[in-house]
Image 1 (cartoon, helix red, strand yellow):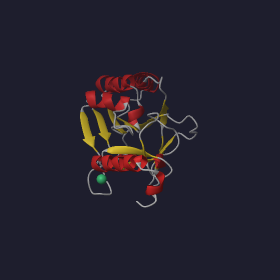
Image 2 (tube, protein in one colour):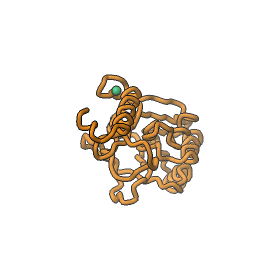
Image 3 (cartoon, protein in one colour):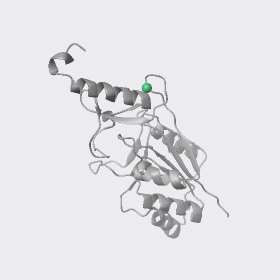
Image 4 (cartoon, rainbow, N blue to C red):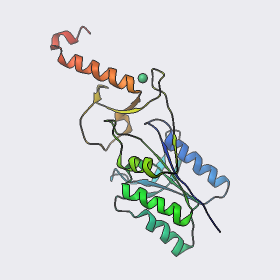
Length: 212
Ligand SMILES: [Zn+2]
């Protein structure tokens, strides 16, 4: 049987319901008795349960992807040992894949005819591409944006990292373990304006800040 798969990248900002979309897609495959597998890069090694969970309450079991996991080898083993040709691979948090792993996924598509849908962020809190996202933009067959809206009404672009006071953080590691609540998705204009405002406040003598 000739199978023709595709490598998809569906990207959006934090809070754009990427995971909910992935889980809805998984549910639809189940309804139609299609073979699929969920996978997710492990970022937080304290994570103990291998599930993909959405805030709307659905969850599905997933396989973990470690930085050394060979995803082509995984697909090959499933076929060789179990005769299983997975129709659809659904990958959450795909921004955390290495470039090599994205290349491996493209070979899974080309050699086995599987479809691979990668859901992930475009950029980090400093507006720079993640490694996995960069490679997906470079080689994916189909790229879709999952849009969401900033408080001001514009499309969200930036995943801003916030501190305990809700101020945008500009420095730090690209990946910080411990909670999506440290991020807020905003449009580019709001991101810029708030940083200008923060810089202005920081440059004022302390006694003036109370009056703002
Ligand atoms: Zn805005």
